[in-house]
Length: 179
Image (cartoon, rainbow, N blue to C red; front, top):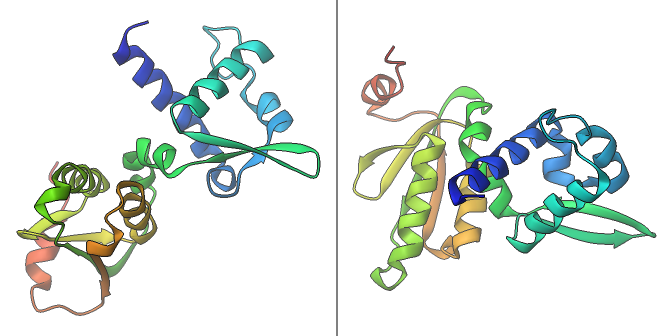
């Protein structure tokens, strides 16, 4: 299986979990997972063995953590899994009339982490208004925090919520749907 197909399958499966919002945040029972997932991909018969392979792959690549509590296995999604479907999560974020600013000053020695963090906030829909100042009209603070933690740059990030700003008309024009 080529890498592009694997990535697409991974994103499709992770996207499936968007239909179970609490599961993304809190985890869920493995047996319930099997019941919900069976039949989701009709072109491939999903047996317990196939699902176990998916889970093993997700665990191997750091998308899930499997833990035992009171004799039950639970699956918890990692920040990496949430970031893999970040654009789909950002589509569901609420526009509430506030602006969410992210500023960062990540040292050059952490260039790769800085570039990865910047890519994530772009995928979230943040717009650049100055060199390291980004703005969004959606409440995505939790996703920004997850990205900062995943890339180990949380000490270099400032996230602010503003209700009033002197460049409001400029910002409003930035977020007008261009159809």
